[in-house]
Image (tube, rainbow, N blue to C red):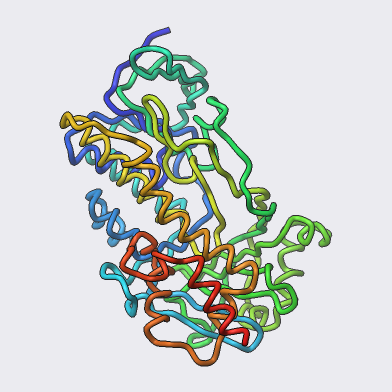
Length: 409
């Protein structure tokens, strides 16, 4: 079996892998990207957060994204029955980008991967990593090509950006159960045919089921008149509905009259998909010769669209650590990578947990909201979960609990 050599091997060409490759190439590093699928390919998670733009820009890919013509996004809207509230991300506590895009991920991911290739990374689609060996001086993987041939790659470092494929966690037995309940999602793309003025296409709409506080819907409009639509609930709730996945989704949407009214003229022209038990965790985000990026390490929940932002943040932190190591500095991957990444992830976790208990929903829909608190919360919803100057980052769990109790009084 022949063996190739490279500096950094990136497993996966999704957002985390492509941005990591772009950042590495800006530092002159040799990068090989291996992606199991053929792009463009369908992926869920279409509503970006503004902080994502910082990493896209840093990776040299901003022009590629801007010129793609994606749907402009400036905030998030929340609905529960007849109650509606919205956040403009330009009105936030933290400095930085306040706008971003809502993207069809098949196109978005392909654009990023080709941008990484344009910058000098070697990109191979349909090449699957089937084994990994960390016992030698350098990490080595076994790869299967589209033609079924097997070859090896020896690298100075591995970055696993394989997303839900979770290549290294599977091969190295790093997976560990998430502490979140098992939830599932049913989703599709529709031609929404929403009349102008009925729906703010510049914002994601998150709707709460009128009877079940832990059941919610996403509505993400695209620039081409289509919309990503999905419902998230515990597995046992979803299993109560019969028929095809599309029929089940339509039945659950019809239980939310306000959302059903918005989509009353929609054309449901695409079969639905489902995803169950997506929350994931690992024993460690790094090891000798490797680090896990984005969803390959941990995935929380889609409610605040944090997945791509976390993926980009992980890529940025990992590349920074690699560059310090190349400069001769001693790098502690737990201190310099895992802990800083987890700080923001844990902020999102507090908000996700508070959402499902109904606590954060009480805050969102309270009629008398403090403008300053709204700006702090807007910053979190915009992705600035690492800004420790924000009290809702520094003490997210405590502040959400106290504010939730005040709103319930």
